[in-house]
Length: 277
Image (cartoon, rainbow, N blue to C red; front, side, top):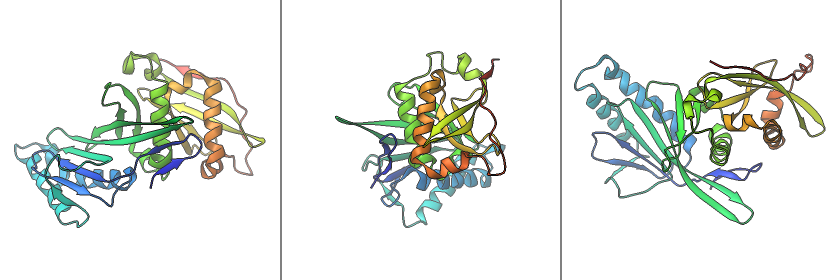
């Protein structure tokens, strides 16, 4: 079964998960964990714990090996994971953890459905074991698509709904080739827009911090983050408004979180205020 985002017909492909650990000669297969959000944060937390217990950050020639052994032991004690030969099984979600390189990586499959068929592709998520920012890239072209934070990953709807949506949008509307050196990436964007949704106008704040590849859509009063969009969508305000409206029409929780409290008037939409380094 797959988690489907009805507003854009994009989904993460569900199957199973595998975990590879650098310096460990086995692959761990988990048939019951078929969704990215089931293991991403638990795997990250377990890797961080093993990293800290082994004292990897403090250095030492054997610290990374010790951390890998601790992490492997935890998977061995969990009946949901079965050790298999590397390359003997495939999965939708493939994790690779390298304590020596301080790398936490997972590849996952995304499906975009259209009127005349569907397309499948893989994306790679990579970040530091002890970090809170993750880059999503195309493993074939090596292009960076967008980034997200640990805070965003904690949101219930991020991986089932927002993640595949941003992936497809980023692939269809890639950023300029300058990548991280572009003015759009380096700049800070903060603007307020009125979004027409179901006969009413919901005022939202579009906020992008410096050196990030995505922007947050916030409640301008509470500052609650309702969704995230790739920076490529910021170059076309009309399309951006349509994307946000589609998301809010299909997601009642996000719509409620971005609506102003009954006792507080919504701020008037204003133009963009952009600063560039």
